[in-house]
Structures are given as C-alpha cells and as structure tokens.
Image (cartoon, rainbow, N blue to C red; front, side, top):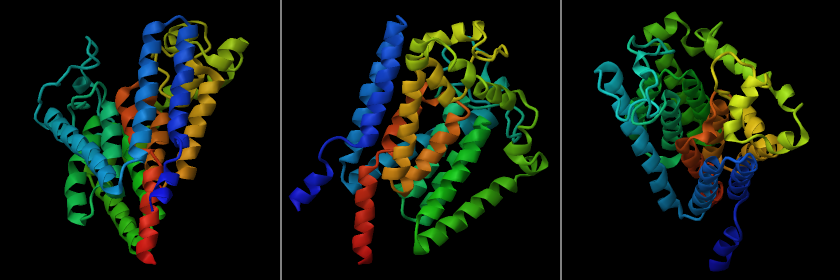
Length: 354
C-alpha cells in the first residue's frame, strides 16, 4: 500500500512544473527588461503557485476538501460583503486599487441589477470579486460540500456577489463551469448536476432586469468593453512582428506602456490589455504564451471533473482580464488546478463502484 501511494507522488506534477516554468519566464523577462521590482513579484508568484499546487496534490482527500472549503468560505464572505456594498451603501473596505482611482460603486453595473454600481468586496477590482465567487461556486459543487441544501444555501451569496460585481464574464464562466461539472459526472451525479445547472440558469434569467436586457450577452453588443477586448486580440500580429528577443521573451510587465506608444498594442486610451493570452505574449513573449497554453491543456488532460470546471472558468477570464498578474487568481488556480488529488478521488469512486 505504501509503495503504491508513493508511486503517485514520485516527482512533481506537470501542472506544478508548468506554473513554475511560466512565472520563471515572466521573471526572466522582467529581469532582462531591467524591472527588478516586477521580477521579485513574478518570482514570488513562481514559488507560491508551484509550491501550493504541488502541496495540494499531495494532500489526502479529506484534507484537500478542507482546502476547497476554505476557498468557498472566503468567497461567501466576499459575496456577503459585496451585497452590503451594493444594496446598503457600505463603504469600500480598502478603497479601489489602493489609489485615487474612480470609486467602482460609481461605475455602471453591467448586469443591470442595481443602479449603484459594481462592488469589490475586500478585493482591489470588481472582476477579482467575480472571479473568486465563480471559482467558489465551482469548488462548492465540485467537492467542497455533499448535501444539496448546503450547496444551494452557500451558492446564493456567491451568485449575488457575481451579480453585485457586474462582471459578465464571471456569470458566463460559472454557468459553463457548472455545465462541465454536470457533464463530467456519471449516473445520478450527472443527472443531479444537470438539474441544478438548468435551475441556476433559469434563476438568473428569471430576474426581470436581466430578461429585459437579455443578461450579459445582449448588453455586450456595441460596448467599449467588448470592442476593447477584441482590439487586444488584433494586437497579436504586431506583437509577433517585434525584434527576435522581444518576440521570444517579451518586454516585461512595465513594457506595456511603450507598446501602446509605439502602436504595437491598439491604443484606445484604456491602457490595459484585458486578455491573459495577449498579455503573456506582450510581457513574456512566445515562451510565456506557450507555457500558459500548456498549463491550460494539461489541466484538462491530467485533471478530473473539478479541474476541468476550474480550468474553464480560468480560461473564460483569460479572454477578459489579465488574471495571472493578480495574486487572488494565481492562488485559487494553483489550488483548483492541482490534478493528482482529483485522480485519487476518482480512483476511490471507482473502488466504491466495484
């Protein structure tokens, strides 16, 4: 028994190595660009993400579930706090981005549920709140709780947190994630998750203001938000037309402004790429982009149902936000993309069936 268990943990998992490799390339890009402060941050992400991912993969099933529950607990707390910020005008806990940037509660809530704007919880950005709540829902339905009534009760503040954040990509991501969980199960589990997915979808669509504007999909039509992100994708060709060193290693995190000034990135006066794939190509070059793609693919190939759902949420956000330049997405992705523990869980389920 011990030798069998040891064989599962021989060496580091591929996902852990890819986390380390991706952030190592980003760190080297920042060093070459002469930005030592950004290199330190990238180095911290490299160590923390890979170590956390590997540590979770070595946990027992019961301990791993405890870690998932910790993510759910934080997400529920943030969801409750965001409800207070939106509906009861509670003050922002840390301010917005730690500086004199426009208060997010004066921004338009893209989901149209309330008039007062977008909440952030204790986080620095509304999209981060949406990301955490979306991942919290996936973790909850993917293994953090067993009883259906517990899942439904805890899902409510996280879903409201997504709506309060006004993040359309988060609502889309969580619906896709639940669908993946439903399709990834078997027998009674598959039917149960499918029923819950349909129930959640209809619950969202039943909200009058959402129906009126056909939710986040119709509200995207002709918006600056969508156009800005589409323009970021069109910057791929100019990014591949830079000098060989920049194409290979990028220009570092602080090279973004220069890329806008030189016209390599489409300049619409909003100096954020809001696409993790394009951001990786710009700052870390082709090496970073390839490692990021390998990280996503390996999560699907090596992981189980929860990993697949978390990866779909992650990829959805990659197309709308520079996710891995923030600590919350790095930490949560490192935990929920850790694949070995999920494989053990699948083995245990097979043993029960037999």
